[in-house]
Length: 410
Image (cartoon, rainbow, N blue to C red; front, side, top):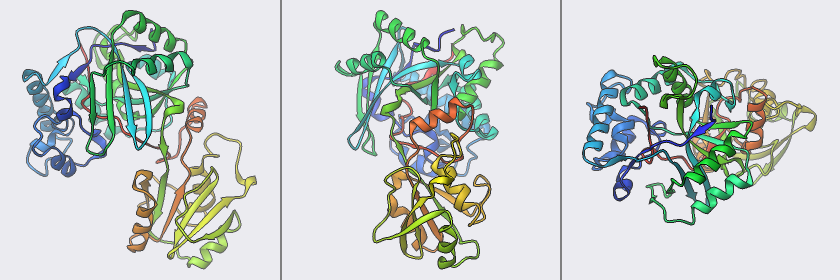
């Protein structure tokens, strides 16, 4: 069965796209979504975060939320805000943020290939979050949040996408955060066939962000009476946007910790020096390379470089997030499970190094660490090895919008 397929997308009519486009469902809490959708009746948040149309305090996982989501989608269809493509197509989707541009392919990816790890994973999922997406898909009979995927850059596929961007776009909107979202339809049969064949020849594609969405799509596919894994049902595929790996933009994902595990700042520094070289710095430290870290404690920034003999030849253990955890955060600060220990928190690089200083200077946190961003090559190496990355290893920017395209399950 094909690795990817074109599909008849559900999308906003172009003149309404700016009113519809919304941030991903999982980057806003209910209060933020309610505020963002205020005065915007056609915002996709009314579908992706439908609790905003129910009494404040409504549990986002309450059955009424999924029912309201379906009701809101039907309203947008009836009012002609959303329309269905007449034939199966691919789409090109360009994101531009602060000078960074990336052009990807919107397609549906194979559940069967996801199940055999040809669509490769690098994170564990949580059942509660999977359950939420399953209920959302079943209520809407559609997948609305695209999975962010990557393919190892190939000149022929990259060229098709780049050539598409020279045509008149279907949609070109700039969101509240300044990110430009531009969308093209690829409906030429010869081009569609060439794209399908090009991806079929690939050994694998990689999940960058969206492990819960892809896992839930797999569960929904298997729940259908007609499921046989042959790829003949629309639910055998899940909504995806696939970018060349060398265009992906991963930001740092930094750490803040509430206390020094009973140590003074001077005692901490002495312990760290057994594994790292330590240099005082007069300004915030943004690491310039892998295996280098910034540390902010007691009003002072330090640059840390781990001793080279402590960097193992292993795709997971050699990640900077692993090196910091295994050589400092666990043995010195006493945090062995960052998934469950409430002494540690994580700060996406989009917030800047000033956020780290702010958290420590407020007294709510005692120490902060800045990290060099994980590379796509490192992510793919972990996925190729069938391993998983530590939690909070990658922060992708810019984010895909919700509402630009959805995949209806016929």
